[in-house]
Length: 220
Image: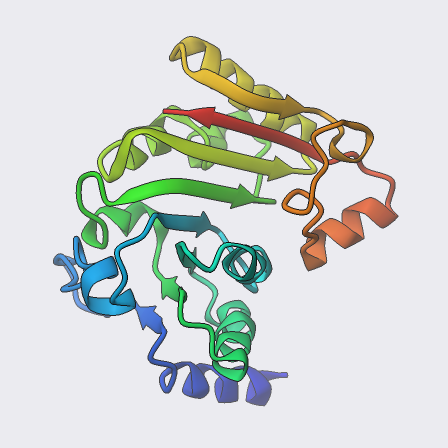
């Protein structure tokens, strides 16, 4: 297992579409900040992020369904990102990149009004009260997102955690944000479509265990 992980880390270094955070501190702005569409994708298009993307399954599926948009999957786990980066290389996808960074450092990589939409799919719900500010839908993170999203930018949350879903609804209410879509049971709702039908490895596990999948779409 350790040898496999090391081999994948080494292969990650060869993928031009996988950008990795440097080891130097303090961190400085990356050269792609504000330049993703012009320099990396070479296409002026809506820019969509998936945070805590894991293996990049949602990022890749969305990129195939919306070839006119540009997508970046973000995670800190290099062994997980390897799978997504490998698929992008094998399928020669031109509108996908992966970014290996801590999400708290995201402002070093994106400029004001650069991002149109965010997907947050099955993140760690950090259920302990003392860890609620680590939740990717907390006010702490929304304040980060506002610094690089366009006005009226859209956030999508898909989760098996009813607690995280309810917490996010509370944050939305506190900040008077606009809810576009919501359900506490995707597969029993009329919202189910080919986008919400995309299933990650973890979602398949939760569904087998009988858990309901919640979904929220809202503007910030």
